[in-house]
Length: 464
Image 1 (spheres, rainbow, N blue to C red):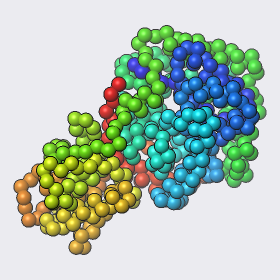
Image 2 (image 1 turned 135 degrees about the vertical axis):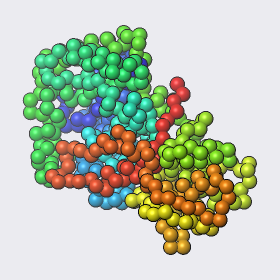
Image 3 (image 1 turned 90 degrees about the vertical axis):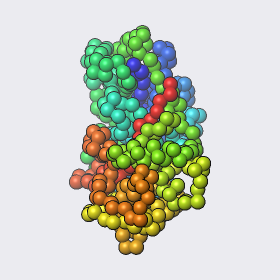
Image 4 (image 1 turned 180 degrees about the vertical axis):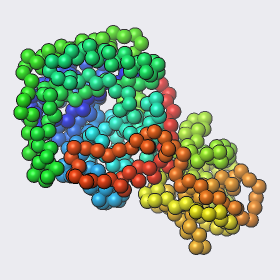
């Protein structure tokens, strides 16, 4: 069983947390356990403002990961502005805000973030794409993954679904027997998982300093628009005493020693997971690969597994239309493996059985191919001779083209517009929630966009 250690290093308003996070980093170092510190950029800037080079240096000896510029809350909650602005404008605003955050975290710790995690469930699909564009290799607070927690690819980014596999090491109160609770819950999780997969030892450094969260006493003011800047948040009014903090640190030391002493656990870092799942920047397919893809998709609209890689349904469609829109390509022509996004609006699908002449199919292949090249995403619909076809329709036509005898037209039956994986638990349980959302906020567009991107879902192949 592999075990990760991760902490959300996010409290920029409580100076007492500086020494706490430093102590956690030092305890991990003493036990030879590399931890990943998901750091909010405003938190990193606060350490710099306070001259805490000692804290920065202690953290930099571990993995530094990204936790948004201001935890995703300022100037407004990330999900709120992405819902209002839509795909393109939301993506542009998110890139504007988070580019500075990524750069500051990388500069202050002299280490580019290994991975990223959203604050709470305040996220947007635009963030997955934006942080990939900014160079962060994986999303390890992902809502998407396999039931056993193994990595997958979603929107082109490596994803690890952490929430279902966490054992909290943070205190629940100053008086709790932390070691007894931690070891009990860890053993329960091991039994549930049967000794396979990942376990995440997780905590928030601020919880070693107070029973309430940073800024918690102002949450109502924030939602009402009376708190508009990061510096307006205040520390908790009732901090633990130094003696209480010390006792909790001693309990934490026991927890880490207990994990480090076990021969059945392998400490693992996110950099190792990224490397184990790494793929070539450019991959190529052969004609026999396309036949394999078509046969697999003929059975079900879902991801495809080849010997060396996996293809999402979007990848499969991109490869098929590339070949079919180039009739002069020979049998030995290498086919580029493109990894487009899924549709960015509601994908169209036929509502009744339709006869599609072969010239229409080839025009549809060209239109889909051109849209992928131009936008990097599947089109939600293409129109040929007055006939509207969605990406699933075009994919079914392409499968017929490769697996059936040549015909002058194809009889195309209605089918689902989204891949079968959209019915999996991780998509059914997709959520957006945060204390910072205004009353009545409904992320309808974001929820739909997340489902449309099921077109990009595929398992990762791990090579330890």
